[in-house]
Image (cartoon, rainbow, N blue to C red; front, side):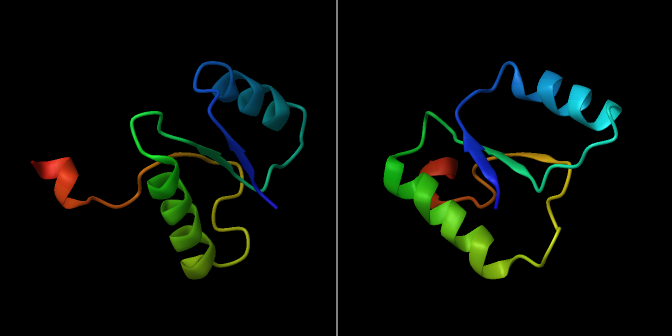
Length: 73
């Protein structure tokens, strides 16, 4: 499982504290409020289809991972 959130402010602090206590997290994905729900979901599906076990362990990933035509216009 992974944590998906829109909490951009406190997640880095929570992750740092969690790791300092010797704990692990499978990964945290932060949604981009500037992307549509469909685009955020598409990014999460792409990640699910192309990732291997523990690839995002103890990391915070900000969406999007990919670029679209809208990003460069």
